[in-house]
Image 1: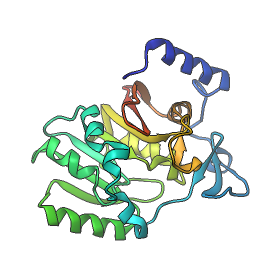
Image 2: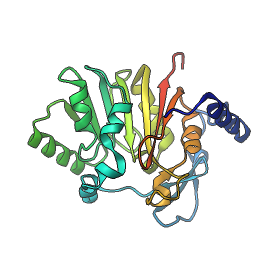
Image 3: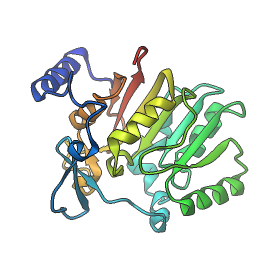
Length: 247
């Protein structure tokens, strides 16, 4: 269920108190001052962005975990796809596509006239993606080799960008979001799907979870307007923003 207006106003108020809602970051701010470096905690890289330590990356050698049978129960991926309100012909970017677990569910919703850009920074993962999509005969998923700062997507081309359990691993979250926003059409949406830090019952390592407030905070430097937060899934937030005009 979407959060009500009162909750949203409260969140914005908290961001204002923290100094993020209007001056959270400066596009000209040097990278060296945007991030802090501290001794890493377990599962982290010691790099701090807006008070959050960035987690270690899950590499291609752990690709099997993305296809675990329990994922249907733990994450309800088909319910997630319903929340996205996809249309025939949509251009979608699945950032951190992995084995295509989510992308192949998106594929059937957007049809042959739509495209899923499956973005990865590891060629090995893209090779796995291509093999799996060939096995099931899916042709509207296009693998894209990005970098740690840039998904390498065409500008102003994407209707929806989705990041499922991946944003918290970005080593350069500001730069990645800046470039994701550049790829979005005005009115295009970006969706953060993250394990809920607020829920101690979610059995995921702390640095691989994010609170709704933290996601809101990290979205504020970018030309994004909050649309909705859904907590319909067993373990994850689905937080949706829209790219605004004039930015």
